[in-house]
Each structure stands twice: as structure tokens, then as C-alpha cells.
Image (cartoon, rainbow, N blue to C red):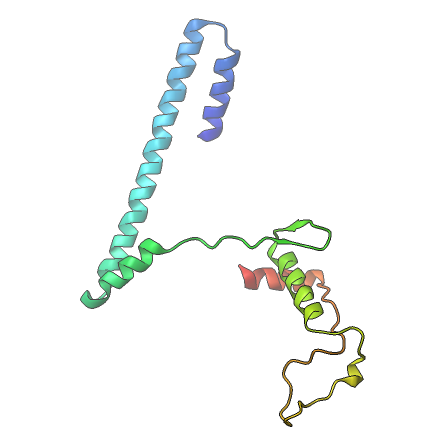
Length: 152
């Protein structure tokens, strides 16, 4: 319906005959009312679904469920700038860039991996060693598809 409205608006701008313009405006107005009514019905259906979900709860949990449903916000997509100052939006590219960033942050490229002791001074195993190099992550097409499925 939105495409039809857009086309009618273009036709109104191109039309020269007053009666044709009036007819096109009437059709566009009718479409606008249909779109508005459909949007209103969808919003009411969503609200009815939320109310039904709240009513299913026990009496002592209804308030908590209502607050949870009303305060739910959509998760904003993560954007990251890489070293060449390009903005990355795709979840897989963002994940690879974050992995590479922290891999570089927690490793010291000047020391070889064999120079890292397996234990700390106290004799307990070290979980985070700040020496050696970690390979940068490269993702194949198959792994990219798996990560995309897991992230969505």
C-alpha cells in the first residue's frame, strides 16, 4: 500500500488536469486511511497479546511480567570501527574485529611463545598469559554462516 501511495503522489505531481488531480488525491487519501487503520489493528493485536500473556501469570507475578514486557527494548546493533576507520555493522565482521583487538591487546609480540612460563610465581596455572602471539582470526564462509546463525 505504501508503494501505491508513493506512486499516486508522483502521479499527482505530474498531472495537469484538476479533475484528475482530485481523483488521485481521493484515492491516495483512501489508501492512507487503510494504512492507518491496518497499523492501528496491528498495534491493538500486539497489545492484546501482551495482555493475554500477563493474564496467564499467577496473581503474584502479573505485575513483574507486565513491567518486564513494557520495559523491553530492542537490542541495538553493535558497530565497530576497524584500524582503517571503516564502520563495521555485520555481526560476523564485528565479532572478528573484537576477537582480533583483544588478542592483540593481551599478547606481547616481542616474546616468543616458548618464553612464557606455564605457571605463575605462586605455582598456580596462569589463565591469562601476556606473552607470545595468538594468531589473528580468519573466518571461512562455512564458519561465517555458523556464527551468523548463533548470533541471530
